[in-house]
Length: 107
Image 1: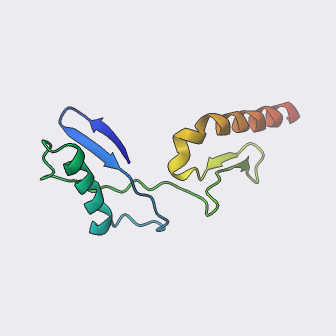
Image 2: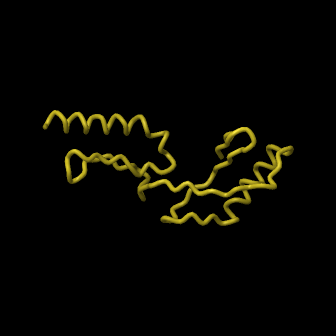
């Protein structure tokens, strides 16, 4: 479960991830536990206006991002981090920098 303020009057709650292709449909069964969690932990907070939202995040079936050169050696890919984008950002940035440096040194 992850929570954060969203502006002065809103509260964001996230806690689900699933392989579902390019699909922004959100099942009520996925939202209900989040609302119940809010009611249990923040009893004074109104859950009357809930805005379901899907943040599509490219991910690979093995959950490992792809950091590689494209067919054109000047094109570098850094994608597929899924819900671990922030967690893996520093290490994949190092990998991209190493590829970019190797590419510019070879040119």
